[in-house]
Amino acid sequence: MDLLPLNFPVFYQCVVKGNTNLLQYDAVSVLLLGKLRKDCETIYIRDAEATGYISGKKSIKKEIMNQATRISKEDARKRIDELGFQNLTGIANATRELLAIVDIPPDMRQKIGKAQDDLSVITETFIMALKCPPKNIFPLEMEEKTRIALCYSKENTDAFMNSIKDKNPILPDDLDKQTPNSSKSRKLTTEEIEALLAGMDEVKPKKTVDAKKSQVPAFSEDMSFVPCFYYCQDNSKEINLFFELTNVSLSMGITAFSDLFGIALTPHVPSLEIYEKLSFFLDQFQNDNNTLIFYKFTVGSLDNYRVPDKMGISGIIMIDLDSDFIRDFYDEQVKMSSLKFISFAQELEFQISLNNELGSIFSGNAATAIANFIDRPVTIRKIKELELEDILWVNKSAIIGIQPFSIHNGKSFHARLLVPLDAPDKLWKLYRE
Image (cartoon, rainbow, N blue to C red; front, side, top):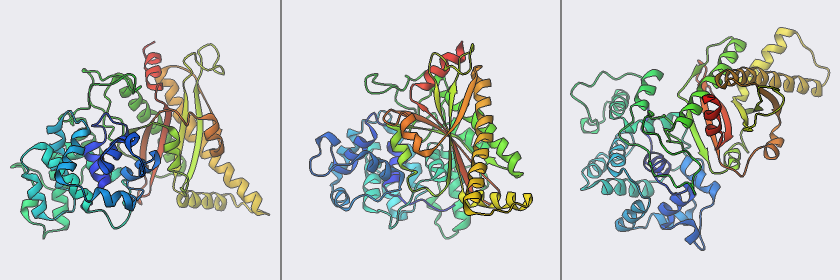
């Protein structure tokens, strides 16, 4: 594993996400411009820009970077303070762990680590993240986000540094924060990662929720932490249930794919994302070359499955597949069936039919798992990308369950469960009936 760059997306993912009550675009605006977006005049950060900046998929504008890189230490400290962190010590400790897995000079790592107080540790790291921007865009994928999330577990950071030193023996020993009984370096298994994530109880999400500003249910003291290290760090019963539903339903679809393709598919740690508007999520796929398949599911009533349940629960099952892999599978099917096409239109029709069949198999199995889970009938129907904005709640908040999976050659795929933000509460009520 390579060291991560200490840039703004990495800093935000570790330090800010899930730890502030500010809206995402306001948090980014405070950090980069020093004020809330409503107070900005000539230069401001739009919603889509904020999402691009913190995901690493978009470079920060030059005029914004010119202002941000010139701030004083006092101004940077003030900006961090305005984020309103409630567990400052826990976040600072996670920041110290982050310093062990990012590519910065050893003397700077030691200097920041020895800062006088917790706020100074975060401030110094923030300044360095601003003043050392990456040369190229560095999108944060599942692997990077997992590493960052696990900064809240010191044991995993030690293991990660051991693996780094195995590949880079010239690294000095003072970079490694060894524990007296640390084990030999090795690659962590999925089960170990899940266990580490489940143990991230040192830094807990805020328990103060403004009902006027957020529809996310208040936290429940008796529930364990859900490893949702994107946007959602809620550990309520409703969110736990949706997390489990995501895992169960999408895993059933993956199993069906494994049988269909005749190869082993490896599921990875699932996660949850919350978007203020679903349209922000869909914007990410405007230029995506992967094969995207969408199926709408609707929870029906017990009396008549064709009639939606009184709670009106519906959502989208989304499958994101590597186009090259699908093309190889398509060619194999054509060869096995000895098919010959007399025109391109006929071949294209076969490709579309194959994609529909893939979506039907995956979504059918996922919907069956949902139906069994909540003991209600569930219907599905395929929808086209052009229909999304018409039938989806694009201007409403949404929660998205994500189940990554991969094949032996390293190619990764994603299956997603998209529902409105109030759906977990409705699902919990159905589950309790």
